[in-house]
Amino acid sequence: MSDLHHRVEETQAILARIARDFSPAVFASSLAAEDMVLTDLILKAQLPIGIFSLETGRLHAETLAMLDRVRETYGHEIALFRPQPDAVDAYVARNGLNAFYDSVEMRKECCRIRKVEPLGRALAGKQAWITGQRRAQSTTRAELAVQEFDAGHELQKFNPLADWSEENIWEYLRAHQVPYNALHDRGYPSIGCEPCTRAVQPGEDVRAGRWWWENPESKECGLHLVDGKLIRIKSVAA
Ligand code: SF4
Image (cartoon, rainbow, N blue to C red):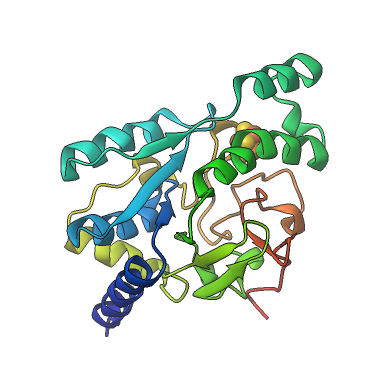
């Protein structure tokens, strides 16, 4: 039997506590399925939690279309944080547009410019931030806590969906008729930048399509740090 009702109540309570005790707080939305659950919960409860997305300049058209879907559905404008144009221009001039395929270092530098630096601006002056990460999503997230101190950004970080299963997510989205990214219906369980995300085969890890040319150990973008370091892996199967 579904445990969705219990999960929703728990998550609503966590979000209400964040709004009450950690203001100003923001939610970093990638506009993917998990993040649409949180968007729906935050906006329907009219919680004073800002919602933003990192517009890296390399997102799929389907992902960008979600900004309109959110506006049409909720009358809410998601704030966008973009990379510094000079930093993007310098990286591209020096290395080429798609240098992230060349090495992990090049990939992390692109993520630093297009995601990590804008995220720092989005989190400046905030007491807490919220993500839609789930424990079951990948080997890199197996130890994810619902609440943790983000030492890299020096604020509280909440992952209210840490315990949710993929089934919970889709049951919620369907039950509440929440709009979702069309790529999810085309084999993309996890969606990042267009050149760095591919569809996955049935049975593959949900994040296998992210930076698919790299080893699993390096598959995070630098946004999620523990004690100033990228979260390290522990096999989900273990
Ligand atoms: S996911 Fe790919 S395109 Fe997007 S910022 Fe990272 S390396 Fe660059």
